[in-house]
Amino acid sequence: MTGMVSNGWMLAFQALFALLFIAGSALLWFPLLGRIRFGRASRLAMMLETLKRREHRMLVMDRQEEALSPKARAFAEKARLAGLPADWSYQRFRLLRAGLALMMLLVGFMAQAAASPDLLANPGLGPWFGLGLKLLLCTALGWWTPLLFVHAAAAQKRTGYLLEIAKLSQRLSICVSEKADIREMLIRAGRPLKLLKPHLQELTVMWGKDQRAAIWRFKEAVGISEVFPLVNALDAVCQADTNEMAEVLKEQTASIEATLTADIQRKLENAPIWISFYIMIPFAVIVLLFLYPWIVTISEQLMTSFEG
Image (cartoon, rainbow, N blue to C red; front, side, top):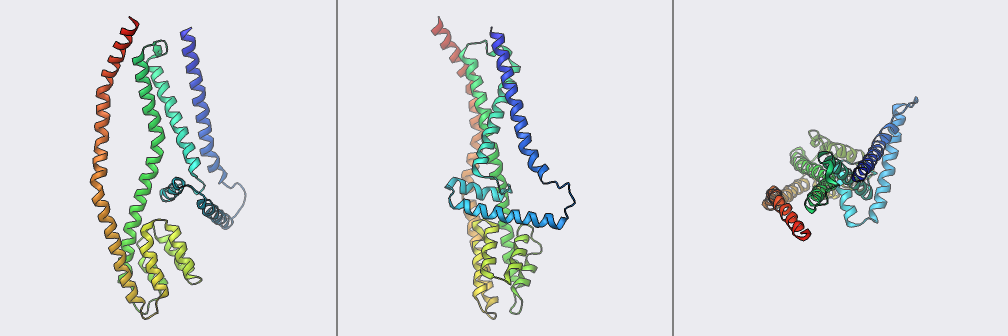
């Protein structure tokens, strides 16, 4: 009877794992295959369609962000920096985390059941406590891994933006002159940049139509708070006269450098706290692994004394 129950558990978990794998493969491959054009559509038509879809998604995201919760809004900013698709909402990301946590739970259970097939037949509290602890660790790993990846990618992208904003401010102070056009100056200053270059190109294209809208679009496209000093500098240049443009831009670039220096100094001051936290994680794991055999032994002795 116990063998039949164990085999039933294994078959159920294998079937559920296969269904989750098929569903995950479908979620991955259907959007990728849907982008492939099998007809004779030109590349220009595909580019225009892509631009229309991007504009529609940006409008939908702007409307949705107005009614988002603080957690969802913070995730939207992190996802935009991490490079996630525009249609990835907070609920969809939580569903992905739940699916990955469930998959890790099933993998952990199947691995433990394959390592010790007589686990379900053993009614002892110690083995079940160890199994529960391992499954809890597997579930926590599956739940927190996607969020850690998003935070790491967003932090790396933010650092790149900070470096390029500082480099752009330095190059603007070098390229500035009283007779130079602001668009030519932005193009020359943004040549060695990688992350800010497409946003600067869009800014220079929209500058001749509406300078305020171009600056606002540039701020929304970058999407981090560290770009505000640069936006203020462009706004001040937009309002200044032609003769005063060079002096105003030099003052604003000095303000940008001071703001970025203060931000970097603040991060350096908070760095020891995070370093201490990261150092405590392996120590906590070591302590947990050290106490695990003692807990199992004590639980088995308690069960033996109660049964006796």
